[in-house]
Length: 375
Ligand code: FE2
Image (cartoon, rainbow, N blue to C red):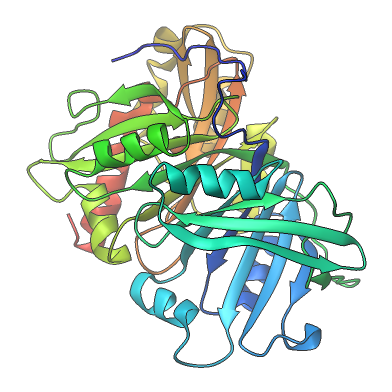
C-alpha cells in the first residue's frame, strides 16, 4: 500500500502525451431528455448538436459543457444499430473516454504497436472552422478511448456539429470544473490485465493500490489500482470485486451493466458546499453516511478550513493524506440500473482518493443494495 502519490512531471519518456480529458460520450436511450437532465440537475450548458438537422440519418447527439467538462449524449434514430445494441446491453453508460492529444495519428499507431485493439483509424474530419483528427482504441468492456487532435480547429466542438443554442432555458452552472478521475469496474481477476494495458499501451504508471484489507466491510470487498498518465492529469482507478460474504458493489455493477465499464465520473469543484447545495436543490440524490461519521471526523483528519455543520448537513466526506485533504460526496446511480454514478470532489492539497472514507461509504452503498435486494 503506497501512502502518497509521487509528484510527476511530463518527461520526454512519456510515450503517450495527453493534455487532458477531451470529452465523454454516453450512449443513452433519449439524448434530448438526458441533455435536459444534465442542464437542469447538474448545471451543464448547451454547447453543440448533431442529428437530423445537420444531415445525420442514424443518430442524434447533444453536447453539454461546464467549464472544462464536455458530455456528448448520443441516441440512435432507428433499430438495429451498434449504439442501440450498446444501450440494450448496458443501459445508459459511457462509451467513449476521449483524450486530448497533440497528434492523434502517432497516438493511435504507438498504442496499436504496443498491443491495443483498434476502434477507429486516424480520421480527418473538417468543416469551415478547420479540421480535427480522431483515432480510437478499445479499453475494458466495450468502452473506448478516442484520441482527439484539435490544434487546427476553432469550432464549437467537432466538425459535423453545429452550435446548440437554447435562448429560453439555460440553468446556471453548479461550479463543476473538470474531470478529476474516472473509475472502471472490471471482471474478477482482470484488474492486473488492465493495469498492464495502461502501463504497456498508454505509458501510465500505477500510483496507488488498495486491496481487500483496505476496502472491506462485513459483507463486501473490492480491490483497486490507480493508473495515471505521464503528466498526472489523467487518473483511472480500476476496480475488481473481491470475495465477500455477500455480493460486492462491483459485482452488482458488472451484473447490471452486463460487463465491464465506467463506474463513476469524479468531477472537481472549488467549493463543494455550494456545489452540493445546488445539486441537491436541483434533485440530485447523494449517498448518506450515518451522522456518527462526523463525531470523530476532526480527530481523524485534523484541522480543516470548512465549518463542520454544513458538511454534516449535506453528507460531505473528508479525508487527509500526506499532501493535504479532500472533500468528496457520491451520488446515487443516475439511471435505473445500479451502475454509473458521479463523485463531486474538492481537493485541498490531497492527491489521493479518500481511502479513509471507504468503509463508511461502502456501508452506505450496502444499505442501498439492501433496499434494491441485490446484496
Ligand atoms: Fe472516485
